[in-house]
Length: 463
Ligand SMILES: NC(=O)C1=CN([C@@H]2O[C@H](COP(=O)(O)OP(=O)(O)OC[C@H]3O[C@@H](n4cnc5c(N)ncnc54)[C@H](OP(=O)(O)O)[C@@H]3O)[C@@H](O)[C@H]2O)[C@@H](O)CC1
Ligand SMILES: [K+]
Image (tube, rainbow, N blue to C red; front, side, top):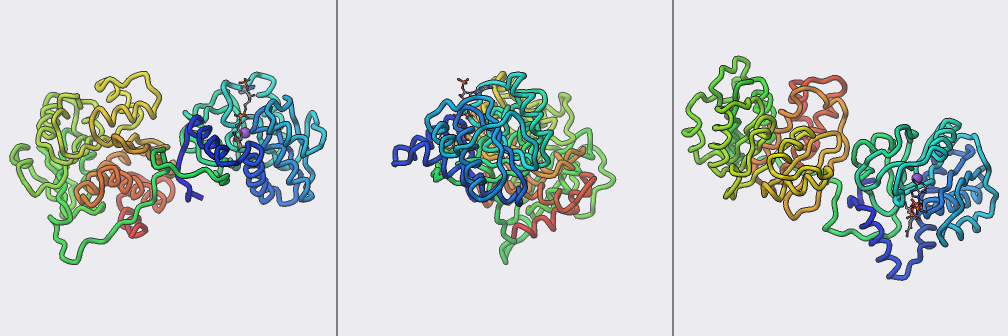
C-alpha cells in the first residue's frame, strides 16, 4: 500500500498530470486508468451488491462515470446520481461512454462519492451537503474516490460541519496531504492508492519509510553505542520517563542530570547531581535531551541556554520549547531536534517569527529558523529538516493520547541521536516508528510507563 510514498499538493498533482499528458497521455486516458483502478476496489468491496455513484461536474465526477461503466459491464446493478452536469470534456466523454440515465435518489449497499476531488474550491452548499448526507445514510458502505467531498486536499481541513464517514478512500495517482493529515484523515477509513503512472519526485513530501535498525557492532561498548545525557528539573517524573525510554532506544549509556531527588530511578540509570557545567564538559557525551520536567523558571532558562551553548547534538522537548529563543541557537553547528506538539509549535512560532502560517509552512519555516529538525507531534506527526522533503508518519494508535508518551518519544529521539548512525531527521523518524510500534504492541489503555516496557519488542521488529 505504501510503495508509492510521495505526497503531493493539488498544484504538484496537476503538474504531474500535465507531465504525463506531455508524454502522450490524455486526460481521458488518465481518467480511464484512475476510474478502472478505483472500480477494482469498489468491485471487491461490493461483492455483488448494488452500487450508487454520486458524480460531480469535474473530472472526479468523470472518474465516477468510468466506475459506473466498468461495474455495469461486470454485471453489478449501478445507479448514478448527478446533481450537476459534467463541465469538462473528459467527464462528458466518460458520461457518454457510460450511456445510462442518472436518477434523483438511490438506495443500495455501496455508496461511491465522486462529487468533488482535488478541484474543490469551497465548502459544499446546503443542497449538495444534504444530498451527500442523504445518499450516505441510504447505504451501508461508503467509498470516497480520490478524496471525500468537502475537504481541502492541501491542508486536510474539513470545510463542512457534517460530512459522511467513509470506509475506504481511494487516492488517485498520488497521496494528497489530506490523506495523512488531521482532521480529514480521520474520516477516510482505509486508504488505497491507484497508480496512474505519476513518477516519483525526490523533492516532494513523503510518508516516512519504516526504518531498518541494526544490533550493536560485535566490539561495541556502552560509550561507542552512545552516551545520552538527560537534563531534568523540577518534575523528576517526566525526565525519568524520558531517560527510561532512552535506555531502550539504542544508546549504550543514559545519565540523568538533576538537582532533585529521583527515588524511583532504576538501578541501571545513572543519576548525577553534579553541576551542569562539569557534566556537559564530559567529552564522551554523544547527545543531550533537555525539556521533559525541566520547568520554566529562570533556573530552567539558564540550564537551557548553557546546554545549547555547548553545541552538542541536542533534543529540546516540552518546557524547553517554551524557553527556546533565537539567540540560544545562533552559531550552533551540532544537530538540534525540537519536538513540539500543536501548542508548543505555536509557542515556537511566536518566538521564531513564524506565526499565522498553516501547519506545514510553520513546520518548514521553523526548521529553517533553527537550522534543525522539527518533529511536529500529533496524530499526524510530521518531520522536517531544512532542504529536505517534509515526512509524515503513518497514523499510530490513538491510545498514545496519554500523559507522558511525549516524554517517552523525546527519550527515544535522544537515544537515537546518541547512537548517531544516521542523519538527525533519520533518527527522529526511527524514534517515531519505535514509539508507534511499541504503542501498537502495548494494546489498549496503556500508560507511558507501560509503553516503555514494549520498546525492546518494538525494536526487535525493526532489526
Ligand atoms: N486532471 C487529470 O488528468 C485527472 C484527474 N482525475 C480526477 O480529477 C479530479 C480533479 O478534477 P477537477 O480538477 O476537475 O476537480 P473536481 O474535484 O472534479 O471538481 C471541480 C469542479 O467542481 C467545481 N467546484 C469546486 N468546488 C465546488 C463546490 N464546493 N461546489 C460546487 N462546485 C464546486 C469547480 O468549478 P468552480 O465552481 O470552482 O468554478 C469544477 O467545475 C481528481 O480529484 C481526480 O478524481 C483523474 O481522473 C485522473 C486524471
Ligand atoms: K470524491
